[in-house]
Amino acid sequence: MEHLIGQLTCRLVDFFGTDARRIEHALLVLHHSLNLCREQTNIDRDIIIAAALLHDVAIRPAEAAHGYNTGKLQEIYGPDEAEKILHAMAFP
Image 1: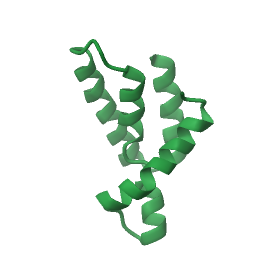
Image 2 (image 1 turned 180 degrees about the vertical axis):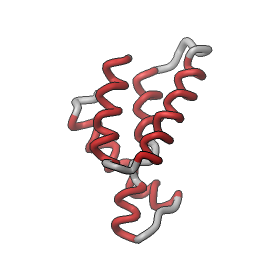
Image 3 (image 1 turned 45 degrees about the vertical axis):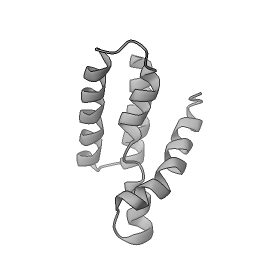
């Protein structure tokens, strides 16, 4: 689990660059997600970790393409961006 968190966090930092606010937000979401996981037994923690850290990766491409981001744009751009990151690290 820690290895996955480290790998994804490094990729997230590479993705967002100097945007510390978005990186910190993703890490806070991860923290809360892992706290919730402690109470559960039948969950895939790797999926929870990936979802927590990558939930906002559509913001950057949405802003680059449109000058702003919305929930709908995140739905459009998010899956492709998350897939690129996960594929690059051979996430199953």
